[in-house]
Amino acid sequence: KQEVTQIPAALSVPEGENLVLNCSFTDSAIYNLQWFRQDPGKGLTSLLLIQSSQREQTSGRLNASLDKSSGRSTLYIAASQPGDSATYLCAVNIAGNQFYFGTGTSLTVIP
Amino acid sequence: DAGVIQSPRHEVTEMGQEVTLRCKPISGHNSLFWYRQTMMRGLELLIYFNNNVPIDDSGMPEDRFSAKMPNASFSTLKIQPSEPRDSAVYFCASSWAGGAAFFGQGTRLTVV
Image 1 (tube, rainbow over the protein chains, first blue to last red):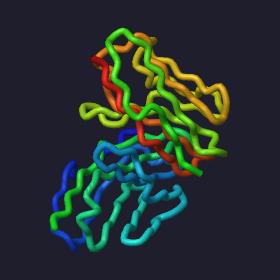
Image 2 (tube, rainbow over the protein chains, first blue to last red; image 1 turned 90 degrees about the vertical axis):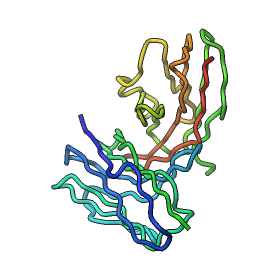
Image 3 (cartoon, helix red, strand yellow; image 1 turned 180 degrees about the vertical axis):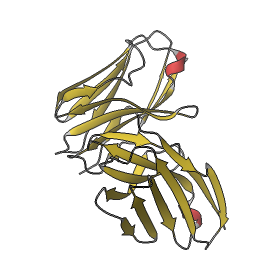
């Protein structure tokens, strides 16, 4: 069974800092990998989707990379803002229709 | 599209009562997922459907839980009888052919 791990579990940074969130998975035979954001009491918002054939995806200040061979993905957030404070989850998609989630990284950006 | 729509947003019920959660996936999506989220266990996949057919229900905790998808635009998750340990946020998500998954806002269930 696919195991997905996110480290650190919590992260606190001052506003303006660049930061990296990590996601690792045990089985490299993935279909795609997706990063989500979850605000307290809310649903999950899709941030970026990386297909297995891709190495990275960018959206605004966010950049996600994928290294299947090492079972790792990173989410890079540039020039962090207090509004970026949330829990970030990665999900690995197996066979196109099964998503395995990590436990998330809780990010706090201090003004 | 309005996204994945779940109802109700909040449900408080007494132990032993039947609870039905509802989900309308994004139009055109062919996969639908039910997840449960708790502080202790995080996000757990309960069941998923592909083209309205249940593919994997191994995450359904007990026979008290059942899910149906009578057509491409509607799914239900039923708990009968409900127990306090079922209290959680239940999410529905949908996707198309291995693409990105989109989640609803969730149903916060409290069983007292």
